[in-house]
Amino acid sequence: MKIHRSPRNREQGNTLLLTIVVTGLIGFLLAAYLTLVQSQNGANVRSQSWNSALPVVESGIEEALAHLNSYGLTNGPLDRDGWTPAGSGAYSMTRSMGDGFYNVKISNYTPGNPSNAPTIESKGYVVMPLVLAAAENALLASSTIINPALNYLGRGVRVQTRPDFIFTKGMVAKKSIDLNGNSIYSDSFDSTDPLYSTNGTYNSGRSKDNGDIAVNSSLTNSLNVGDAEITYGRFLQNMLDFVIVAFVIFWMVKVINHFRRKAEQEPPAAPPPREVQLLEEIRDLLKQK
Image 1: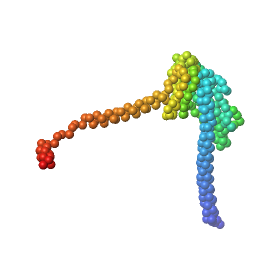
Image 2: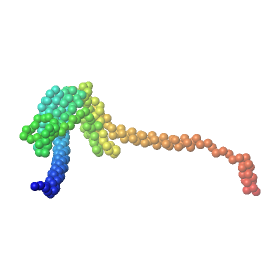
Image 3: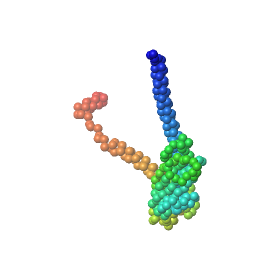
Image 4: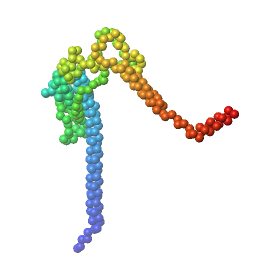
């Protein structure tokens, strides 16, 4: 007895194999797409978190600059108003802002040194989203964590400071200044020069003559000294008005003299030829007759 295999079973086996291959390919493509979407979502969330950390960093820099402007201009100690020493020539501060916080440090600062050029390092931290918190090997800046139960993402900025002048003159007014009184002094001092300061602070016995007084008005007598006794300082407005007027008059006189010399140097007109003179004499004789 002979058994014949039906070709239908073979066709069903081929169909099943093809279905498995197509399903596996679709599953692979779907897994790759989901992985790409997850990576893109993580990148977007990380970018947003970093952008939200930047205002926190800027807040730390602004607080450090305000602290330096309050106490650093006189080269005094900085361990006040919540700032604590953090090593040689360094002071630090940690302050929370909502769910985040910043840690800022001022280094390269020595009290009493007139040539201080402090360095500010500010690190801002915001709460890390769950998408990033679940990832492995997340990159974080090191700092003291306020809430250990939360995961933070940090960003830091370093700023190098230098002394600069806030005002170009000792006393400046928009319209006018009237110094109506006695014993009014206008002088200056240099906190970086021990010859013109005492430990970076003002000393009337070591003042300089840069206490300038100025106004930006062009009206006459906009700067009035009155009967005040100004020991130091230069009154720039009157001097500036005088220089401008003298400069204009100088150029006007110079132009007038230039045209006057040019007119004096022009040669006299040449006499007409001899024939022309004889014809003019004949014409005059004929008119007389």
